[in-house]
Amino acid sequence: MTRQSDGSTDFEQMLMKEQSNPNAGFVQLLLSDYDEKSVCIFVEGKDDPAFYFDFFSAWFPESSILFFPCGGRRGVIGVKSALAAYSLSVQPKAIYYLRDRDFDDVLGRRCEAEVYRTDYYSVESYFANGTFFSYLLRRFSAPAPNLNYLRSIEKQINDTLVKVSKVMLGPMALLAILRSKGVDFNFDKLKIDQIIDLSTANFRMQKRSMKMMMALELGNVSYSLKELMGVSRVMRKMDFKQWVRGKILSQVMRRICAYHLEQVEAKTGRSYRFLADMFGRLALQYSFGYLKRLDTLERYVHSAIKS
Image 1 (cartoon, rainbow, N blue to C red):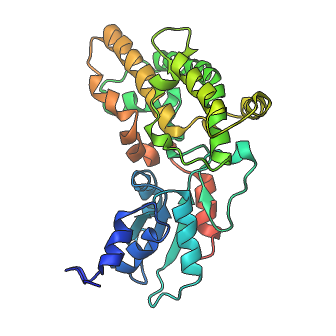
Image 2 (image 1 turned 180 degrees about the horizontal axis):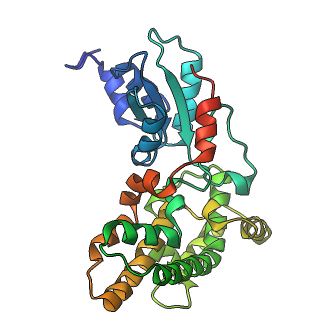
């Protein structure tokens, strides 16, 4: 095998490029410059470090915080299994495994031992509420709009999210069923406009979304109406942030908040358009300032077995 300038082999480089391969995160660790003072954290995707970094930095101020994206849940679990069977020549200060909750609650799946999973569907889900809208306006505008006015907008945003989630019950139930059947489906390519129509106050499922559901029933994947209704009933009893995909919620938040930013501008005469991009991927970097703490993560960090 040819050895590259960084000392890695062609095979190792191939694994690094294919993040969906469960070995990729393991190889990244071996090729990194971690030491005995490092805190090594295996996560699903490349966006996760922005969400988690400040929390771990606060808990381990004297350590190097190293994140290793593993290309998904299977990658995180694969790395954990690989490390359990491998003796590292240098033991880091701590190793943690973090993953999204996904449809676990809907499908009755338990979390793997010594692995942390998010409180909601994914890290994006934490920002799907009106209080995050208020947080950004209060943080980045001077002077900020009246607090009572912001509280009224918070309620409107929350009410809208609940309405939208009700329309998404069917499509999300279908996605959960696909997940349970192990269907190889690129969920991240889904756009909110493919699922529901947000152009009017009376949100409706898109006709092409309904056609997609019917087509799947006639295609390689089969499911019964009873199965779909059963999953929908389970979802209806939960907080929508536990079963609406986080990236879909981010798209919804951008739409809703863009509208409310225009309303705030009209009322105050000040521009807030620059905040529009923060209701998506950029929101992750404000997790520590906005959330202040994540009790479930903190408990995991202090109780997890360090290896």
